[in-house]
Amino acid sequence: MPETVIHQSSGGWGPIEIGTDYTHHARTMARLKGGVRLTNESDNFPQNFAITRMASSAARFYGAALGYEPEGFGSARGVMARLFNCVTNNGEHLFYYHPNLYSNDQAIGRWLEHASLLDRRAKPAIDVAAFYPDTPIKLDDEVVRHLWASAFLSRVEAMRSTADFDYVSEPMVIEGALDRYKVLLFLWGHVTEKPVLDRIAKWIAEGGVLIYPERPRGPLQTVEGARSVWNRWQRGETGKGRVIFFPGDPEPGEPYARFVRDELRRLGNLRPEVRRAMRL
Image 1 (cartoon, rainbow, N blue to C red):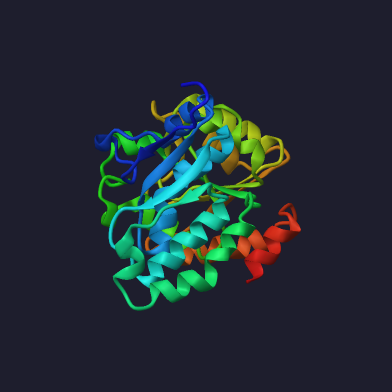
Image 2: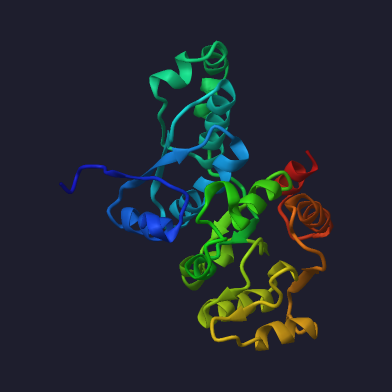
């Protein structure tokens, strides 16, 4: 069916056991000139952002269309959160179940007042990316296996109050996605494959800025335990770019988010529209 537009559904929040790889999903659907239909949207915007951003980021990078569907119950808060998520991700379609709008006494009025914002949706201006820890997810259950107790997702939720940001997975790093961003944040995960770490180091040497929390897991290293890149950064050998170390523990996530906010506001390489949004 070469003329049929296909949006493949996918749910969950990314644990290995579910079998969902949002990077590969978006890349595959882009090749088919189709799209990604996420069926996992939450009623809570920070959590919704955290669990949908890998697919949304990958879809933008590879050129796949985006659509959204809730995973279940929706309050008026959730109706607005999902509308905001679609508008700011330039989504192609937004689906609500009947109860999302009709099972509470506020959602219909909010929808009628604000649904026209869909006509203003556009590609977002994003200068900041968060490293998506594919390798740590494979090695350790604490990273994303449990939705309500995820070391990575909880830090994403806290960081969203500082800036809008994409995820960059390890395959996306290898395929050049870092060139789209000015700043790379590490939220959780201190292990990656050597080719990925080498590409990050090259991006920094060419002018990129990395922000990294030194605790509780310690130095960034390869799967084999090599720390040569980290040692160069510790000596200040970063080429045209910078590595900014957060000396504390990013648990809870709010102090680290405030640290990142202050550092981003001092950087001169962010676009004016991004800087204006951060001042809000």
